[in-house]
Structures are given as C-alpha cells and as structure tokens.
Image (cartoon, rainbow, N blue to C red; front, side, top):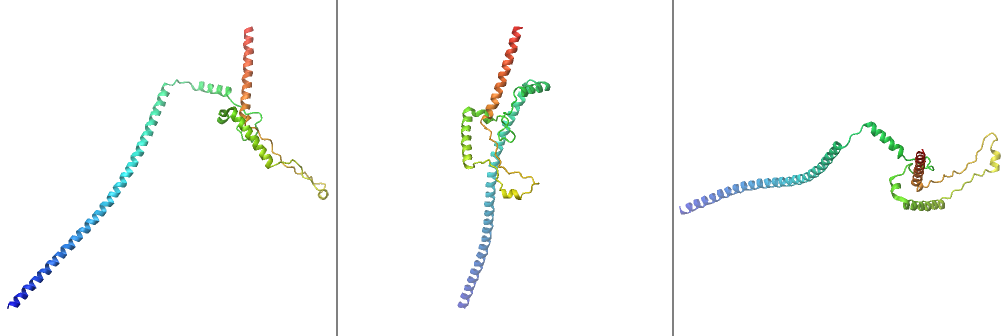
Length: 226
C-alpha cells in the first residue's frame, strides 16, 4: 500500500511538472512572437527616421533656394521700381524729335572703312572696342608681331612666281586649232596691315574735322567783313 501511494504521488508530481513545462513553453513562444513584433516595429521606425532625415535635408535645400529666389526677386523689384520712377520723372519727347536727333547723330558721328580695306579682309570696316582702347603702343607691338609672322611664313613657304615650261615635243603634238594657255602659279595678294586700321579711320575723321573748321572759319571771316 505504501509503495502504491508513493508511486501515485510521484506520477502526480511528474504530471504537474510536465504541465508546468508545457505552460512555460507556450508562454515563451508567445513572448518570442511579441519580441519579433517589436523588432519589426523597431525596423519600421528606423526606416521612418531615415525618411524623416531625408525630408529634412530636402526642406533645408528648398529653404536656401527660396531665400536666394527671394533675394533675386527683391533686387529685381527694386530695380524695376527705380526704372519706373525714372520713367515717370523723365521728360517726354515726340517721336519726330527723336528720329531727327538720331538722323543728326548718324550724319555727324558715322564711321567709314579705310581706303585700303577690300572685300574678304579679316578686319572689320569699323573700329572695334579693342582697336579703340589699345592705343598707339598696342598698334606698334602688333605691327612688329605681324612683321615677324610674315618673315616666318616667307621662310617656311617661299612663293615662286613662274610659268610652267612646255616641252617642244609636247607643243608639236598639240593641234594648232586648240588654244593652249600656260598655267601660272597663283600669287596671294598682299595682306593688309591690321594695325593701321583704326589710324586710317581716325586720320580721315581728323582731316574732315580740320576741313570743316577751316570752312567755318572762312565763313566767319566773311561774315565779319560784311
């Protein structure tokens, strides 16, 4: 009897331990599932944080661009207002007066090409800003440089102005009816001095100014005599 009771109690204890173990195992599996859910949520939160950082950087860039645009627009608005104020304060002239004034400017301050300028010349038929600002020293240095370049080209590519010699035997074979013209080597025309371009224009303008001054002085003297 005593052995049977001890066996029963031992079986009961083992069964209770097994039940407790199963219960703990189920609890652990539930906790593991909860932990996995928390890990997934943490991963999503990390992704959201990275997206938020990217959006913040983009917003900062847009903020800087907007500030620059505001500065540009404010300066443009200020200049436009200044121009409008100047237009309001400006004195109005009729179109006929403006056209007459433009015609007088075109007559008095027009420029002409130098006499040695020809078609195909690389220079412009009017003085450029570079020609107007470089002065006499720039023209002299350009003259020397062009002379050196001309000498180098003459040494490298010597031009020979000769005609082709036709052999007498070839001339005998040529029929008398056909007109034979000897081929001559083409000679390039002399290059124009680009440095004297502005000086030619200025000298012509100076001569015209002196002539007008002389004519005006003659008319003044005639008026005095009268």
